[in-house]
Length: 180
Image (cartoon, rainbow, N blue to C red; front, top):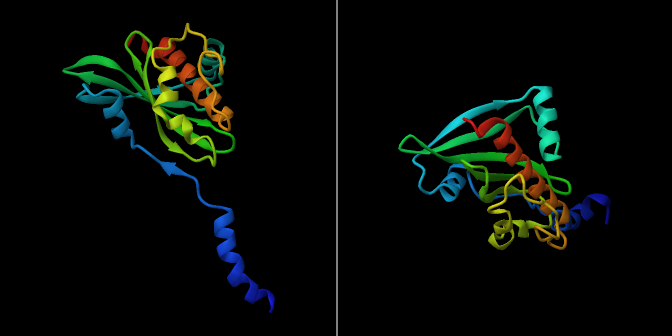
């Protein structure tokens, strides 16, 4: 049997050995409805950062602001602010995790939804039982993995990085949105 003949057997094996793990769970619009069910409008707010502002975000949250721009929507009902909806990405172990955070007018987490998860392990962070640990958190609260927010075995980096990302979103609220 020559090498070409072996390829018939190797292709199915390759498909089994390297399956795709990327999964999209929610669109932005679906997450907005879940996190702000009473809101009737979501107005995009352009948050673009200078290097100095990115330094302030890091100083306030302890986390680096990776992007120069942050996706933010003002959630409204009858022209009244309900809170802020933010879409962010953090790295898991190797791949990006796209998530949404809802923050109240006064700066506490209303909820977190995972929009896309691309890692091979750790998808348990999508479970409501884990995400509920972030609800109610403010920037003043402790964010310590395995103490304030439980760790999930096999998903430590995903847990830590989503938790840190939520803390960074709270810093953005304090620095740029609290007075808006």
